[in-house]
Image 1 (cartoon, rainbow, N blue to C red):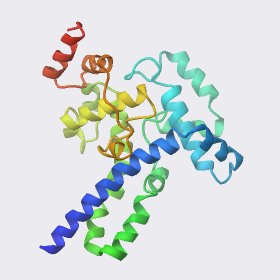
Image 2: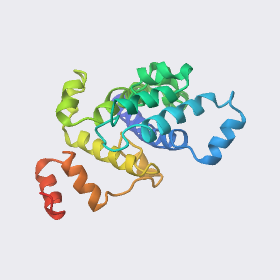
Image 3: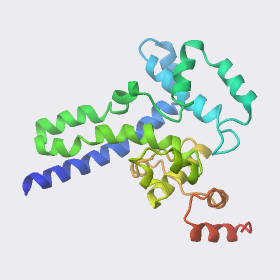
Length: 240
């Protein structure tokens, strides 16, 4: 019985570390401050990975795509052609493979777990192997959110269900999935907040915010709420 409690405790600790590290790393790397970027560029060999990550996420995913519509990556064919032409040749193939920032390659596995891996070792040596067993699944689960789910959030629910791998089809349209859609929509509107897909971390360091009335109406129009809730928000805005 004690082993089961230790496994559950390890899983709970893993959840807390996973949600916080997701929010924190998303903010300080994917949306790095000008001061941080200046430091990186003074030492480009040392910070090469961070420079690349910022470019792929902040510029490609947030600034260069989804400019007018949360569900539309490019406004037209010319938009895509111009973006492709602007991407350095050595980087272009990877950006296309990662769907212009919608997913990640397996190369990112260790970077996504840069906090979790040493934490797992500390738990193993100081709290014991059963706690480590409970913690360990988060090394797989945390990258999977970005690898499989992020790209679905930028599509309407019907398209997302068609695209979803069989193991996550059940998730699309659930209350939790709609929460991820809304949180990510708000993040695109204000890139200094709402970093999480795994809930909780944003609140731990005060990076969460509530949706505005205008955002609620737009998210209702985009089917990010259950129908009965969406109808209420649309009536409030006079758009039902």
